[in-house]
Length: 458
Image (cartoon, rainbow, N blue to C red):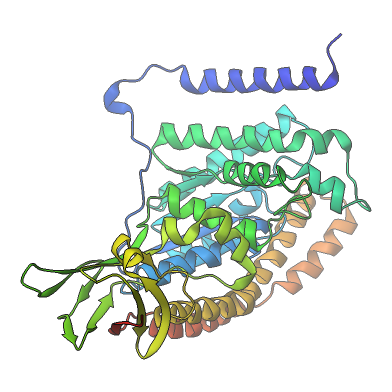
């Protein structure tokens, strides 16, 4: 006789097949098939909203994507708004949509929901259909504003972390065994919607699961999600990398190539910036270079995530190569600071500077990241607290509508109505405070002309 696990797995597959067949069975012509969004295009003044639940409310993956945008597009004044609320389901997002999403006039809205919608139980068809209906309505409202939805899979539920690190709250064993698969199902549905309707799509689930599996080959207790649900800074950086990668944002900062002609003249060619004239005086090579961008630098608490994703090399490459040096060791100085010593062979292959904390451009990018951390841990979190109280209010209001004779619900609603009084003014104050720090970020993120010196040391 099949086990309960096999029976439930069979039911999930059957339910998915039925949903997919209904969704894909209507005949269409080639002209009616929209391409899914291949990447995002950004212009000055564009607005992006990150809509989600507590994983967005953590203000981490959103912060790291903001760090990327601030440093990769320093000449664009982009507007980024975190619209995450702890505990939110798709229904909750609908209740605050007009003021917390549409009011920011977004060009793109990323949607990270589903973790709570699945209700932390094995697959339940009625629960999924509620999520499906509310998400469908939500996606429709986003498109009605003129924005492009970017649907993102729910993140990983780490069953092993639940058993290892949450022994005082062990949870239901069957839920622990199955909930990550439930989230995979929800994410697959999001992908189908994005593909069929021409929206954006980001896979959050796979990178978190794949990196965790790889690390557990040498460290069986490894996790990026210690409470099983909320990724820590390293996991959140993995999520940010998924957004940058899947949305085809530019991966390279700059490449600078110096070479010596047969006549002994030095020339410089650059992508992602502008190099000045190269001069050589008594064997010392000097030139100026102004990059169009800064490297993507994140706070130290996400350093492991940067290492696991190879963030610097893959998404922030800042390369220098020199052809024409005699064999030996050479010292590189930028703006009067020695940042490293390299062999002529290494310089000819190319060196990468993006993770070199001694460079002034790295330090400048870190200043941007720390200002943005201040912005997120201060006014942005305060703003999200306002919407968290509103979510409680909206839920109790629904309970009163469904149970008009329940005095307890009415009393709760009255207290919550009092709590949200003056909320619009407080929201405006938090937004203004966030903008003040943002103004400082856009002063700090402007690339500078740097003086490079290369000299032989032995």
